[in-house]
Length: 60
Image (tube, rainbow, N blue to C red; front, side, top):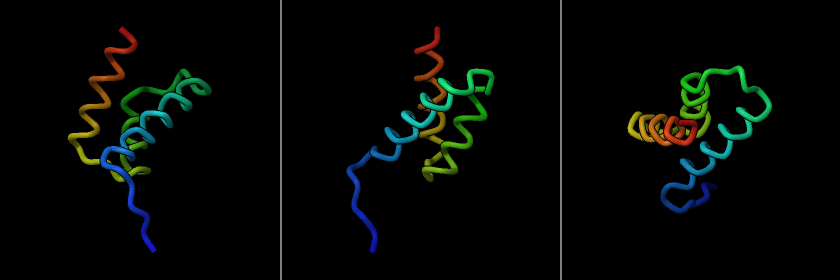
């Protein structure tokens, strides 16, 4: 049985996962984390680009 999730929920989960990973592993590259999150949460390249832009802004 599949569960129905609101649109964008996977993107939010990925962002939370990346934030947690960065907290415990600050030396990991952002691009590596985003790539892993995209595989883990089945995100599109467009979502990956969004995460990259949003998280880089956050750190600037």
